[in-house]
Length: 143
Image (cartoon, rainbow, N blue to C red):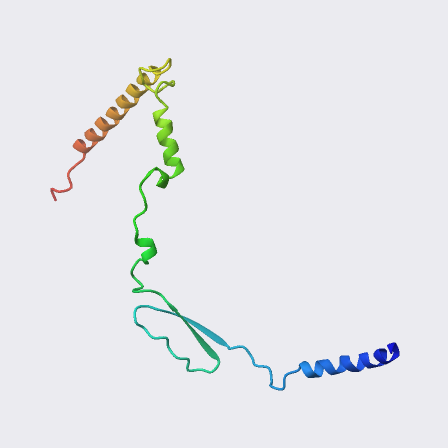
């Protein structure tokens, strides 16, 4: 029995590839695939070349209109804020009482008042110089 199977096995292996082969010649893939996005009531164009496939997709109402999923206004609650904005708000609220904050609360709050007055004086000085430069500039409207 084993001898018969040993002799028949090579013959069966030769027959299987012949049965798996297809009688029709292999087809080549298309040479061109064209993708078209359709808006409104446009129709999908027909392929004029046998080597071309036309793929159509629905683009919505208009190419110039924002899709409906993006039209809704986002929520404006605390959960919709960026974490950096929330952090800055918390930092500003907690700034009272620390050094250089110009606050009557805490041990180092008064140190920032002097710094704040110096910044204000410096800005007023820059504004005065800019005003003086505008007044001394010749008018170009007299031509």
